[in-house]
Image 1 (cartoon, rainbow, N blue to C red):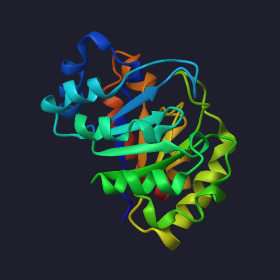
Image 2 (spheres, one colour):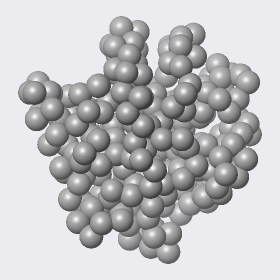
Image 3 (tube, rainbow, N blue to C red):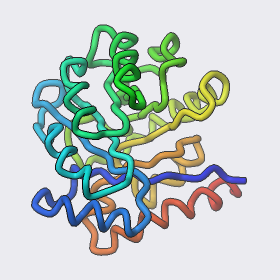
Image 4 (tube, rainbow, N blue to C red):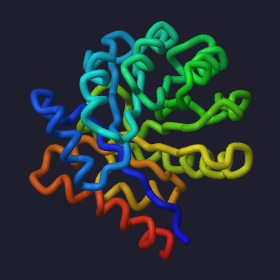
Length: 225
């Protein structure tokens, strides 16, 4: 039976003046997670949101709040996001000198821990932290801005990580973020991803909300090819 695909709309592309209404609309249209792209203007060029956004949203949705920290020294911000009510925190392998320590701290705070890998970062950096991972995020664009085109060269990395998860960390989520739409999603699912992050595709089209269910139907179709 095909693996269930989860969809995590990224609020990076949403109207920030209507976030409360947006998360309710996403939940009503079948979204599974809410993806919070946190940027600090240092690790990536842009500045976006902080823990206060998660705190404001938490009373208005029962969906998983998935904090993706595109920040330098993420260990300095973990407690604030946990207090705000997020369910998972993903840090970049490239953003900290002590990945094992950061992951253990997240776990110790009582939520799920993930690691994100930039397009040029090899998957081998995860080799000694697999027991600590609930989620691996493959960036299919370079982080820092929405609306970028998908980088096809990451597909072998997705496939490799899907196999490693089956071997050493069954049950961990394999998430892909960047340029996900109806043209790119089938290849990403075929490679083994089971959580799709989509921002521009969902929010920049008047029919974008329909993509949430459309992505989910791709699982059966793709695996049957």
